[in-house]
Image 1 (tube, rainbow, N blue to C red):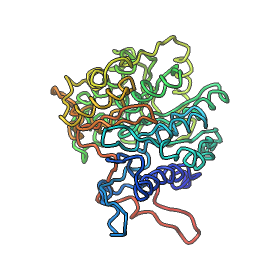
Image 2 (image 1 turned 30 degrees about the vertical axis):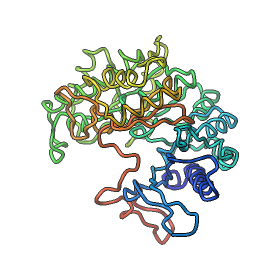
Image 3 (image 1 turned 60 degrees about the vertical axis):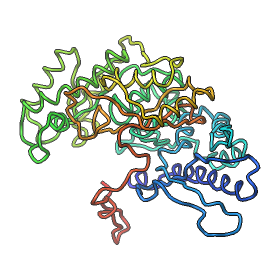
Length: 436
C-alpha cells in the first residue's frame, strides 16, 4: 500500500520527466536562435509535489550569454497536459499524435508552435513507452485491480486511463472505476470527456457519501459532527440529492447511494437517510468494508449487480458543436446548479482566440473547488443563488479539451499548515509509518 502511495511503478515520474524535457527543449531552442519565432511560451514545467512557491517563477537568471530570462511556472504533475494525454490516449500511436499536437507557445503573429514543430514528440513518447502499460495489483483480499494514471478531478479530468479501463473490460465480468470528487467534478468529466472519447457507458453508478459529510454540508460545526443530529442531516441532504439528481435525471444513469458507515453514525440517522432516498426512488446500501473487508460490502455488490440489469441511456451535458461559453454554462447550470457564469475580460479574449484557431468544438474541463457545488469552497450549503466565475481559459490541444479555471482554484496546490510529511517515517525494521 505504501508503494502505491509513493513512487509505485514510476508512472508519474515518467510523466514529469516528459513534461520537463519539453520545457528544456523550448528554452534550448530559444537559446540557439529561436528559429520558430517564440514570442510567448505557454508551456509550464511540473513537479509531483504541492509547492505553492513554484506557481510563478523567473527562469534564466544566470546572466550567461544568449540565455533569455522569462517568466515561467509549475503545475502539479497530475494537472500536466501530459498526464491528461496519457489517460486519454487509446494506444502508443495516439499518444505520440497527441503529444505532437501540444501547443507550447505562439509567434508574434499568434501562430501556434507545437511540440511536433520542436521535434520533441518522439523523445517524449520514448520516455512514456513503458509507463503506458497499465499496472496490475491486488487488494488485500486478492481481487485484481488496475492502477494507471492519476489526474486530479478538481484541477484536471479525474479519470484513470482509457487503456486501463478497456483492458479491465476485456478481463472481468464487472469493472468498477472511480471518477474522483463527486458528480459535479469527477463524474461529469468522466462522462462528458472520457466516456464520449472512449465510446463507453456505465451500467450503474455508485454515489458514495458519509453521514458525517452530509451533516457538515448542513452547517454542523466540525467539533460536534460525531453527535447525532437529524436537523443538520436534513439540511445537508440536499447536497447528496443534487449529486443523485445529476446522475439519475441529468445524465440518465442507474444510481445507488453507498454510505460509508462510521462508528458514530446512529440508527436514527441511517433510517432517516434511507427513508429520504426511498422518496426519491433511490436505494441505499450501508457499507462497512473499512472494518469487515469484502464482507462489509456484499449488500452493495448484490444491489449493483441487479442495478446493471436495468436499461439506461447516457446523456451528455452539452453538444460539442456548442461554443465554449455555452458548454461551460451548460455544466454550471445543469450540474452545479448555478444561475449563470461570469467571465473575466481575459477569459473572454482567450475564448475568442481559441475559437479562431479552430478548437471551439472541444469538450470543457472545468477546474473548480471540490468542497462546494459552487466555486467558493466556503459555500458548503449552496442555498442562495450563485454564479460560477471563470478567470482563465487554457487550451489543451494535445489532450483535446479546454480548461476553465474558476474561483480561487490553483493548478499547483500548497501544503497544509501541518503537512502529512511530518508524520511519515521509516522504522528500524524498514517499515513505513504515517502514510495511513
